[in-house]
Amino acid sequence: MKRIYCTCFLIIMFFVGCVTQRTSTIVSCNYDKKTNQTNYMVFPYGSVSIPDQWERTGYNKSSRQQFFRNKEGVVIAIAFGPSNKFEFNANNSKKGFQFVKAFYEWDSQYFVNSLGLKQVLIEENDTDNYIIWRIYGEYDGSQVDTYFLVGDKRGIAHNYSLTRTDSWTIEQKIEFLKRLYLVK
Image 1 (cartoon, rainbow, N blue to C red):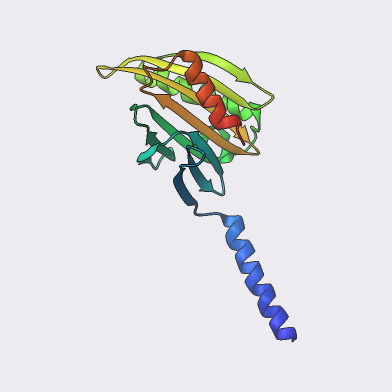
Image 2 (image 1 turned 60 degrees about the vertical axis):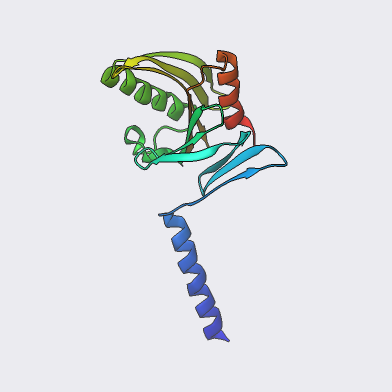
């Protein structure tokens, strides 16, 4: 009997060790016709329900962004990940809204300094830990107009971007991003 308990203990410790290392993720994406939304999940980091039907397209491994397109041609990118995996927060000193501000400064300055684009801060919310901003201008002969929302939920960065939205008003773009982040 003692041997069985020992074996069970070792198996449990093995699985606990695997879970705490978290070297891999489980990803799922499906369209729910009843609710008319596309559900995207990256376990153990986060999930989101996107209104309407969206098709998964490309994936950027370095930024962990999954791209989606709807029937209108609107493109969104979604990424979840631990906030301490970003170069500006490797020591995990920035948490909550402090992390969000640092992410915004780091990401927006890349677009401004490296690509010559313009940026504008649209909304800051230190209660729900998110910032919305816009990057726009011309780069490499193409017009760029992308809206971003970055947030932090319990040490997990949520990064959403929205582009190719000429038929949407500015208010619709902002509300769409906020819905992705705020709806539980």
